[in-house]
Image (cartoon, rainbow, N blue to C red):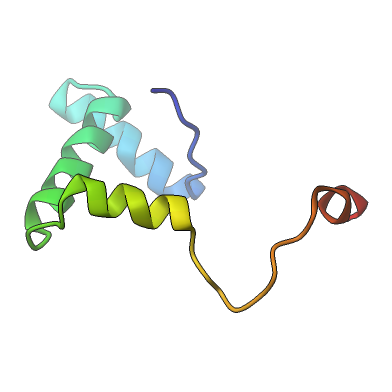
Length: 73
């Protein structure tokens, strides 16, 4: 899946240098970094639990804006 991330200029510059030194791509560095972080996490709940939480949404204490309210901003 393609996605876009916004990196600070300094981080992006350092990332490009690290990728060049390792003769790899920024994409591969990002994948390696995410895999390293995910391996350190405690055992996750079953995927079905996580998916159920995503479908319920996060309750941040405010009512979600309607489509019209969002477009008015």
